[in-house]
Amino acid sequence: MKVSELFTLHQGNSFELINGVIAIIKTVDTITPFPAGYITVALGGSVLSSFVQYKPFYTGFHVMVLEPKKEMRLEEKLFYCHCIKMNAYRY
Image 1 (tube, rainbow, N blue to C red):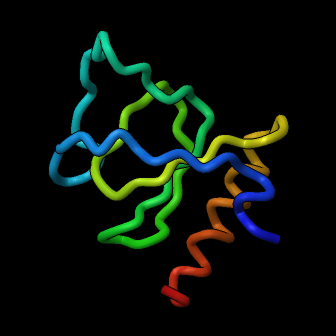
Image 2: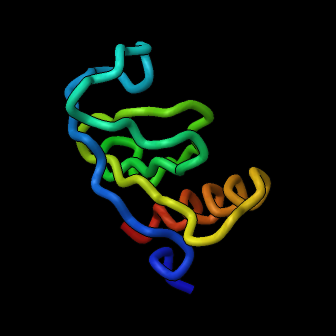
């Protein structure tokens, strides 16, 4: 099954912040944050590291955001994060 069958794929915001999740930032008036519950996937660095975001968020460079196409429980999202990460060796 393809990721795109389960999720709508969004390009991240490409904001610049070094060293992963290290800050909480103010909302940018002109840019709506992604909602809580979406999955972020690293496209660089620790490729395909995947996480469920529990608060509204922005992303840095080289991050894909996955929006579930149907309602999913947290456990399902965590399962898909694991599946995505386990395929990192392919890339």
